[in-house]
Amino acid sequence: MAEKTINALGREAAYQLANVTKTPPQYGALTPKWLARVLEFKGLEAGVYRVNRVVEGDTPLDALCSQDPGKVNIPQGYIEYETKPREYRLSSISTIINVDTKVQDVYSSPYDQTREQIALAVESLKERQESQLVNSDDYGLLKNVADSQRIQARYGSPMPDDLDELLSKVWKEPSFFLAHPRAIAAFERECTRRGVPPVAVNDAGGVFIAWRGVPIIPTDKLFVDGLKNPGSKTGKTNILLVRTGEAKRGVIGLYQAGVPNEQSRGLSARFRGIDDNGVASYLLSVYCSAAILADDALAVLEDVEVGDYYDYTRDPV
Image (cartoon, rainbow, N blue to C red; front, side):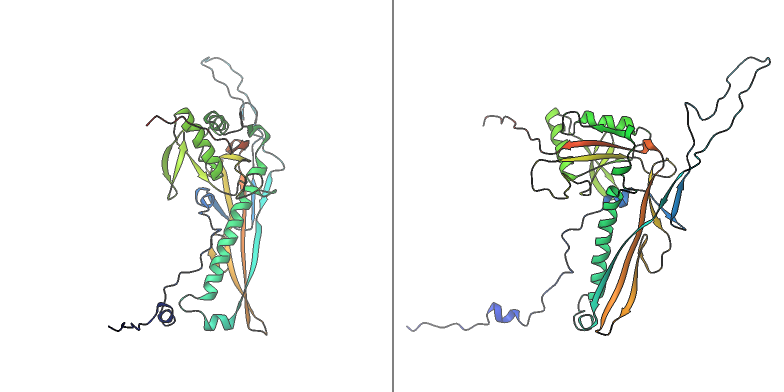
């Protein structure tokens, strides 16, 4: 009997005519940017925020407490203010996106090329904004912690006792801890070792572990040995504890309100024109800063080791 030959359309040939499903561009470096969600922000009118403070002693003003109905001398005085208060000025983070109009005209189905380029650039600027909120020499939280609010990890690894010590520094309505994911993992290992696993809480649309009811927010902007993603299993970082809110005399983020062509809070995208080669140009800018309204609104646990691990004895099978 002769063999029967089967002739059928092959997969590779059929693929050439298929309308495949495509996704928008995937940007692996994007993070949830939780800090921008949990930090209270205030819009400015002229790009300047002045923090007026009282010159404080044990009490801001002497007062008399007495039940004597006779003649008494009531203390007199006034509450003194700092004569040179700090002013926070917005800084700008900018970039320029160029898109060839021929590419836009021919290749914008199903995804608008210009819109996708601008969307990716916006996310990149927001990543840089969050990094500056933490690390800027001018207004970054890490660089502006008061000396009295800095403590060292007792044994290197972040212990429950260390976070309790942070809470003693920011005890007036603390809002959240801020830590690198590796530092959070190190803290969880220490809690597991002591049999006190932290609970989980819901906040700002996410689920986080918490210590003493205060959520621990992850961010890779608190670097480990100066890196977002260190290759080594060991390394040192910092953990911040923050009270946020203007009404609470806490830490607040600042942005310019009502910027032209606003894409999101304090971020604008402006069309700069098309050059002789048909390249369209867009300027993207975000204006941001942060203000610490009181020294006790922020504290830091320094030199936190993230590379300590433990071996546990397995139960016999």
